[in-house]
Image (cartoon, rainbow, N blue to C red; front, side, top):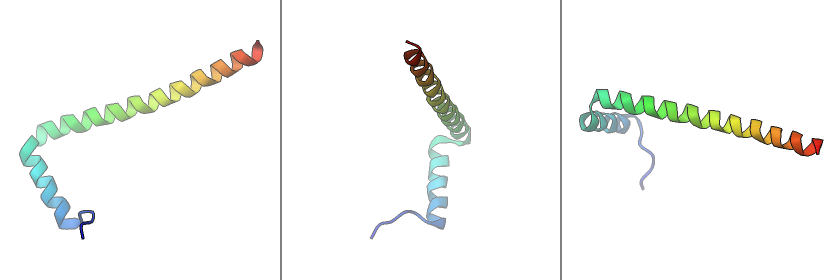
Length: 61
């Protein structure tokens, strides 16, 4: 039965990924992923602020 990889299997997967992409490209991918997550969270925050502004405007009318 197949399950999630465990200790030694993760090491093998990591070695394969490093061989395929190289350490420099992995760093760039990680940075891009971090920026994407940050932008996503900021977008969620802006959506909440916009919703509050819309609700406030509706209450005033």
